[in-house]
Length: 432
Image (cartoon, rainbow, N blue to C red; front, side, top):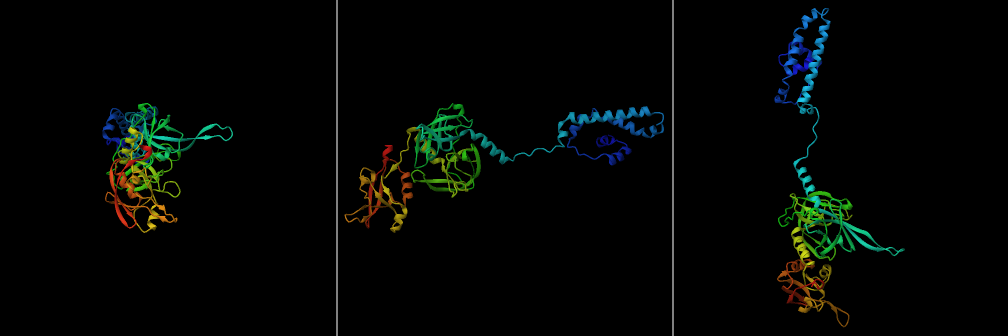
């Protein structure tokens, strides 16, 4: 214990220094000078006791035969002083003891940001179960069995839930499970098959509904960090991270085949069950709806697609207000692009233009057979309002920029002549 005292007091006699060097290992205490001052009330007592012991050591050795009892008392005094000093180190400040314990690893700033984003936005993501009615072959009872599941998110405090149309397609009943595992029956407010967007409604308390903050997708950049939250393979509230791999991609709607433009491509893992879930930026704002993946196996291959929020917002607003999306059509059926390419022409070949549709009323001609059974090609649309049309995607892209009631000039190749025909755009018959 003399060595322990010599660690703190420079006035310790030489004899004690050699003793400390030979018998006591050195410890390095991470203790500040201000912390050591807290034990100064004990230090003078210990120093005085130790100093007296070692200064008198030569004298005591000469009187060892006469003062054995005194030697025992001195030893006990030193022992008590040592215990008091040790206790003061631990009682005065716990940090001195913690100096010998490895501190736990702390999260980096980017990890903390990711954890915070997940915790703040998870309550907004829901689990959707698609139930279908099936009749038992033996009892003839009608049963509801799950035929699929997906993700969605809270749009507002009125109970509107946004998801993909293909998540709810063919459902006889829908269940929505919130983050707290409470489940509610859902009703379909409306859907847009062409853009694969659907809006549901649940009757849940407002304090359980946490809408996601709506962001902007027009100013996104390739390389920007993104986060996907969903329920892949039924594993609820799973977070995957990645970056924006590409912008302005085009995919086809799973329901109608109509192209969806300006789609966001990401390498964040998107698997079956993620459909309908949100794609977030680093601030936690919604920038897209996860809708599709490119994968031969059906699992994530690092190429996922999300419908941009700028497209989704306009659709959801119409669905909430009117229960439908009013989108203009020409009212034609056209041939696959490959068939037109085989003819050596560029454009959209009209297969059918019903007389009660916009194109039929305007006089566009359909493909038909003559009296001898020979195929007579219909009009081939080459441009609309001066914008070139090379395939069906080009035609849809132009129509998406138009409104119901607009007059457009359709240029067609009829035989070997080009003709310009004005057409008044109308809504779909089932939406009028």
